[in-house]
Amino acid sequence: MTDPTHERTSEERPTAVLVAVRLPGVSEEQHAADLAELSRLVKTLGLRVVGQVSQTMSRVSPATVLGGGRLLELAAWTGGDGKVESSIPSRDRAMERRERMKARRGQPDDVEPLPHFELDDEDPSDWSPSEDDEDGDFGGETDEPYETDEADREAEARADHELAKVVVVDHELTPRMQRNLERATGAEVLDRTHVIVEIFHRHARSREARLQVEIARLTYVAPRLREAGAGKDRVRGGVGGKGAGESALELDRRKIRDRVAELRRELAQIEREQATRRAGRSDQRRVALVGYTNAGKSSLMRALTSSGVYIADKLFATLDTTVRALRPETEPRILVSDTVGFIKKLPHELVASFRSTLDESLEASLLLYVVDAADPTFRDQLAVTREVLTDIGAGEVSWRLVLNKRDRLDAAAIAALHEEFPEAISISAHDPDDALRIRELIVSFFDGELRQADLFVPYTAHGLIRHVYEGATVLSERHTEEGTHLRVRAPNETLRRIEDRLATPRG
Image 1 (cartoon, rainbow, N blue to C red):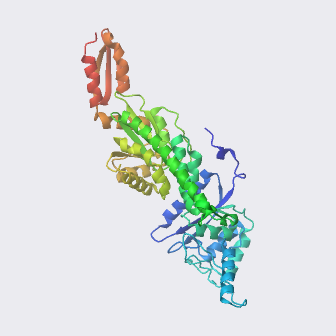
Image 2 (tube, one colour):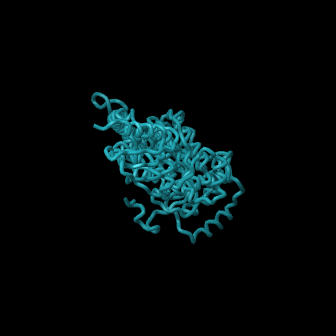
Image 3 (cartoon, rainbow, N blue to C red):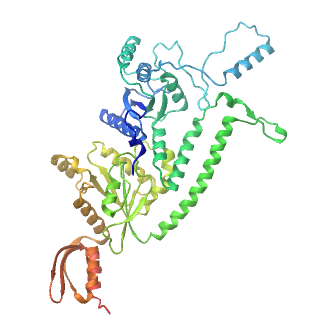
């Protein structure tokens, strides 16, 4: 399947600049990994990264994320002026109200004008920087003195570079932060949550996934609705049109709440149907592949089940849970589930929406934690996976660690990983021999340790040869006048079932 975002050339994709603040407790390596992950998210969304602005601060600036100097640097990437102009939709109404108050009190016309500041529904104490803020700190902290001349020099130096049309911030933005950054940069501003939600929206395929994503999108959008100039009119309510009524903004938010309620009812119906199907599989043996996004779960799923699972080198390529039988099939068969990948700072809206998807992990008897061993931050990724699974109640399910993508490591790195994780199994999901090792690990978990045995299948019961090949690894095969002699290796329980079949007379 071809992704439409890959059909466009790099020149056609909108340009983006990344913004991140390194907070206390975050190492330089981790900060660089976070920026690299954000870059991959942005690439998956279909944008092209042309630059990044990073700053070390004790906290994120509550007004503009960055300090004043870095804000000017960011504006140079987008062609903005770096100024946060203050304007409020309700200013005209405030002025009218002020004129009425003056008329009542008989105030002269030469009083000081109203101060120009921004009101925010979410934060009544909101403020915007004025020309008096000489340090340009905007409520945050800068990591170094930043003179205007230096900002001008950097802007001139960057004039030869391609300007970014989108600003992507590796933090969750409040409505105030987003508005201020848009004014300072003149570009569209997205935060990490918005990017992830949009990726989920584009990659969702099943009806359930689409419903879950739409709920997450609406939940994210509702508090960020802005009242346009034409939205100040109020729709009268009550009998005879009396009463304060609702503004257009309030109506829009109520429509969103109603739509979310409708989607939740529809999703609940689908979840009941899925619960019924899961109940029908409750007596079957289940394995779930879990782990960080793009760790190689879908590639391993395809290798284990010989199925056409969608695979792409991008984040969140899989959003729908896929269940397939382990191949070659065992008796009774083992079901393998490929689940949605995890990621740091996963939006709460999506964690809640995809809870039913992650319920596959609760139904499994064995979890395979698949990690990208070539990623230097995979230990943190593994911790994120464990944390999320513990939150949904799957922390006590038996699990095995699978270190994937060993083909990207040298022998010394593989040896170091084996010393650090002695119980783990290192593989490449694209190596058939490694896929066979994982299959044997899964089968042995359910049927016991592997052992070797010699079996004899008479020609009168030759139909049982198929069951032997399905349940065991045949090491050698020899034919005599009486029948077939097989040397096999299989789990104890599987061998017991095969031997019982061979011992049972066939009528």
